[in-house]
Length: 452
Ligand SMILES: Cc1cc2nc3c(=O)[nH]c(=O)nc-3n(C[C@H](O)[C@H](O)[C@H](O)COP(=O)(O)OP(=O)(O)OC[C@H]3O[C@@H](n4cnc5c(N)ncnc54)[C@H](O)[C@@H]3O)c2cc1C
Image (cartoon, rainbow, N blue to C red; front, top):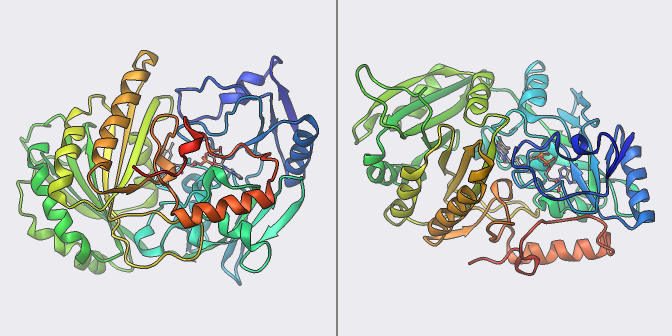
C-alpha cells in the first residue's frame, strides 16, 4: 500500500485523479491510502483510529458529488481491489469493489455465458453502484442489482474483517443493499449471483420533436403499466447529432429519443415485445429497430457521458401522471443548452414489494438530468439550474431520489423509507459508534432523508 499525506508529492493526483467529474471538490483529506488488499484496508482503518481521522472510501470514483473526497479524512482508495473470480457450480462471482461493471465484469461473465445487471455506464465501479441499489441493464426484469448480492466481505470501524450474508452479520448485509455512502463499513468483496446470459439484445429507437413532448409522455404513461418487464423504456432528451432521422428531416436541436432495449432469446421474441410501440400516435422524425450488443450500448453511453467534462446532476422519482409532469419536464428538456447535456424519463413502474434491504424508495417514473459542460465559470449557473428545475418536477408527485444521481450539497430529498433510515441509524450506532466512516455528504446533515 502507499500513503500520500497532504502537502507531499503525489497527494493531489491521489486526491482527485480518479474522480470522474472534472468539477473537483474544494475538500482536502488528511491523507490518501492506496490499498492493494483487504488487509491494507483493515490497516488503514486502524491507522485512522489511532490518528483520530474519519475514513472515506473510493471504488470507481464515479460519484457525481465526489463523496470520497472529505475534509481531514483518510481517503482509502480501493483501486487495487479489482479481482474477479467465478464459481461454475453456484454461478456466484466474487468481485472486488473497484471492478468496473460494464468494462470488466460484463465481458468476464459474457465469456462464461453469464450476466449480471451491471450499470449502464461501463466505467462505474461496482462498489458505489451496488451499495446504493444499482440501476443496471435488464433491471426491470432482474430487479435492483443489489438484490443479486448474496454476501459481502467488509472491514468494520475497528479494523476487523467480517463476512456478511443473510445469516452471518445480517445487519451489515441488510445495510449493504441500499445505504450507499452511509454504509458503516468498507466492502472489500461482493459475492454476486449471476444469471444465464441472454443470447440477444435488441433495441427500438424513435426520434420525436420536443413540440410533441406532451403527447409522447401521455402515450408512454398509458403504455407503461402494460409493458413487459423485459422491455426497458427510456426517453432521453438529447442534443447529440447522432440520432435516427428520416431522409431530409432536419435535426430540431433537442431530440426526444425513445430508446427501449430488451434482452431476449430470439429475434422473434424482440419483435413480439416491441410490437406495442407500432401504434405510435405522434409524428415520427426517425425510427430504427434491430439487434445491438452490450458493447455497442456501452459505447453509446460513453459518448453521451464523456470523460473530462464537468457535471451537475439531479434526479427524482415521481408518481405524477403525464399531464402534471409535462409542464416542468418539458421546460427542463427545452432549456438543455450544451452538446452533451441530457435528461431521461425512465419508465420503472414497480410491481412488487422490495425484499428486506435498506434500499426502499422508488416510483413509477425516474427523471434524471445531467448537465455536461467544460467551463468552470458555469458551475454555479448549471448547479442552480439543475436543482431548481428538478425541484419543480419533484413538486409534481415526487416521492424521493435515487442516491446514484444526487448531490446533497445542492438539493436534498428522501432516499430511504423512514423505517429503513431509522434502522440504518441503529446499525450505525452499533457498528460505528464513533462515526469513523464519513457517511453522507450533505449541505444540511440535520435534514438528511427529509422529503419535501
Ligand atoms: C457516467 C456515469 C454513469 C452512471 N450510470 C449509472 C447507472 O447506469 N446506474 C446506476 O445505478 N448508477 C449510475 N451512475 C451512478 C453511480 O452508480 C454512482 O455514482 C456510484 O456511487 C459510483 O460508484 P463508484 O464506486 O464508481 O464511485 P465512488 O465515487 O468510488 O464511490 C461513491 C461512494 O460510495 C461509497 N463506496 C464506494 N465503494 C465503497 C466500498 N467498497 N465500501 C464502502 N463504501 C463504498 C463511498 O461513500 C464512496 O465515496 C453513473 C455515474 C456516472 C458518473
